Image (cartoon, rainbow, N blue to C red; front, side, top):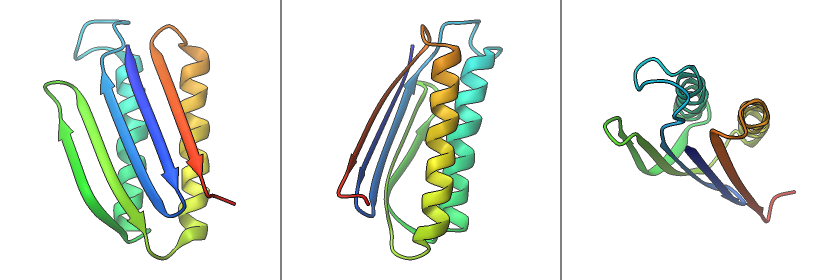
Length: 111
C-alpha cells in the first residue's frame, strides 16, 4: 500500500510518501510509477519555479520513501495552482486504485 500524507499550514508544506502498492512486482508496478512521477514532478516544480526554502528533502528508493518539508516565500499563485493540480492528480490515482493508495490531506490556515 502506498501512503501519502500532505500537510499544509499557511505557507509551510509537508509531504510524506512511502510504501509499495503491491499491484505488481517492484520495478514494474504502474501504480508506483504513476505516484512516483506525480510526486517527483511536483517537487521538481516547487524547487525550480516556486523558489521554495527546503528544510528537509529526502528520497530513499530502497524503502521506498520520499519526505519533503518546505516553505514557500514567494510565488504563491504559481505554487497554489500546481499544488491544486498535484492534489487533483493524487486524488484521481487514489480514486482509480483505492486498494493500493491511502491519502491523508490536512490544510490549515489556508484561504
